[in-house]
Length: 178
Image 1 (spheres, rainbow, N blue to C red):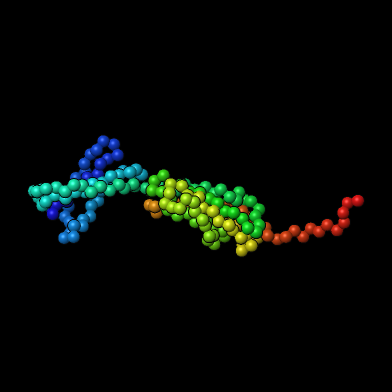
Image 2: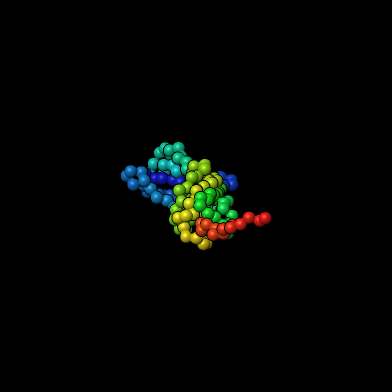
């Protein structure tokens, strides 16, 4: 059986014909098609009898967006170099106009945090939040990390340093002013 494929361009419709393309007995075929980078591409595949004789099937259409741009990401809380103790809210957001955000993870001192996502992925923009118990980390500078992955497997990471200070103050007031 002969097969055909065409890729309309984003602008005026044009045809990219690849013939002959041979299919297996199950009708499976492989074809390399150039895509317009970081833009939607529409593919249409159709079948014609061997040698172009006979009827041509209606095309099956697939929309594919090439995406090699990593998601944008922003740390929202806590502020950079903040002094934190006990339970702290960690929040970051990610956005991806191409294929959409698939996953956002948060970690503190290289340890994953139980993260809630809103809205649930996949979505163009996702906010991740977690409650971090700083008592599980040593006092001093600690790195927070937010990692976002889009549906095209592009990964972006952002880090922020905070200062953990869980040592109670040892100041003691012995007398009151007169």
